[in-house]
Image 1 (cartoon, rainbow, N blue to C red):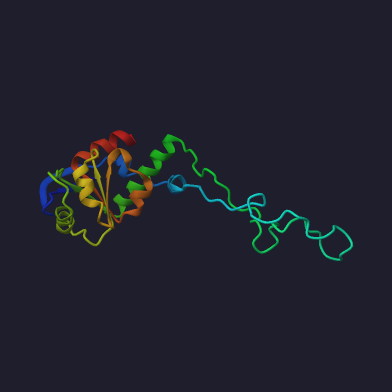
Image 2 (cartoon, one colour):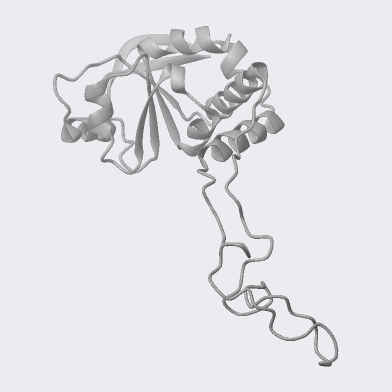
Length: 208
């Protein structure tokens, strides 16, 4: 698969870049995508939720009335979960939601996500560029030139670049990621994926 490479002014540079069919041309595996996205979202959860149990609720531990002979049900404590203001029965406890997946499965999921984007013609190749200082206005101009100002855009750069990252972080629909941090969720969450020219070989090296 070949893509025309654009420059930051939004016009074709005259260069073309070849995308590896072993990544962008595979038959996507939906189950691998599901598992990888599920893991990503699970790993984002703090898991610090906590409800008060019987031993933690304030209240008297005195037995409310004798066990037998009242005609009512037996009650051991006002802190019981059956009373208003009592404990939460089987409430949430702090826990770790993260789980592991095989490296090859995660690789397949990222390939599948990129393959979907390639099928939808949602991948754009851009000439590598740099910024001297973080400028949101300059970054917005680049997106406008590429006619992506109304799209949710994921820009993939070869390595972490503080100037480009800081220029984009105030824009709600813009995301910048280094190629090594690329994940299935962010690929699918974007409507357009912009690959910087120097990021393509890095992605191939990681996914092959």
